[in-house]
Amino acid sequence: MIREHKQDELEYLWNYHKDRFPNPVPFWQFRETIEKGKVLISEIQGEWDLIIEGFLISLIDQDEPWIWDIYTKPWHRNRGVGSALLNEIEKHYKGYKRICLYVAPDNPAQKLYFDLGYRVIEVVDHVYETGPALKMVKNLI
Ligand SMILES: CC(C)(COP(=O)(O)OP(=O)(O)OC[C@H]1O[C@@H](n2cnc3c(N)ncnc32)[C@H](O)[C@@H]1OP(=O)(O)O)[C@@H](O)C(=O)NCCC(=O)NCCS
Image 1 (tube, rainbow, N blue to C red):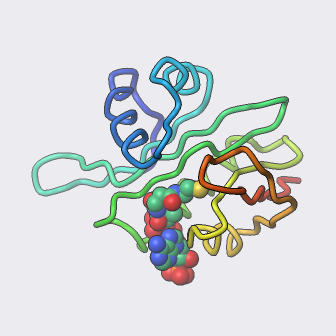
Image 2: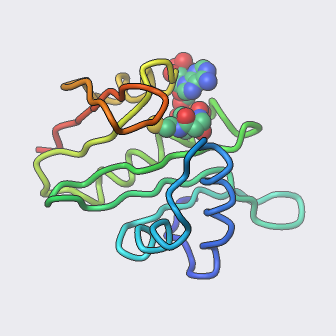
C-alpha cells in the first residue's frame, strides 16, 4: 500500500536519508523539502504491525517535479516497491511536462529508471561531491 507520509515520520525519514549520503543536507533543509514536497511511503502488513518498505521524496524545483530521494529497505528490494513508488508519483504530477532526477553514474538504480522510461539528458557536475551526476527525465505528457 502506498500512502502519504505523516508529520511525525520526519525523524524516521531523516535517519534513513542522512546515513546514505557522505554529505547530507542539514536537517533544516531536509525538513523544509519534506514540508514543501510530496513524500510517499510504501508499507505492508507484517505479522504484528504495518512495516515500511520504502519511501520516495519529491519536490517542485523551478516549476518542475523532481525525485529527490527514493529508497527501499534492503530486505524488501526487487519486489516492485521502487517501481510502484515511481508510478504513483508520476500520476501525482500528471499535467507537468516531465519529471527529473539525478543519479550517480555507478548506481544500478539507473536501470530501474531506464526500464520505466527515464532517459539521460545531461551529465551535471557539482551535484554530488563524489563526482558527476546523470540527469534523467521522463516525459509525463
Ligand atoms: C533503487 C531502489 C529504490 C529500487 O528499489 P526496489 O524496490 O528494489 O525497486 P523494484 O523492485 O521496483 O525494481 C528493481 C530494479 O531496480 C534495479 N536496481 C536498483 N538497484 C539495484 C542493485 N543494487 N542491484 C541490482 N538491481 C538494482 C534493477 O534494475 C531491478 O530491476 P530488475 O530486477 O529488472 O533487474 C533500491 O535499490 C534502493 O533503495 N537503492 C539504494 C538507494 C538508491 O540508490 N536510491 C536511488 C538514488 S538516485
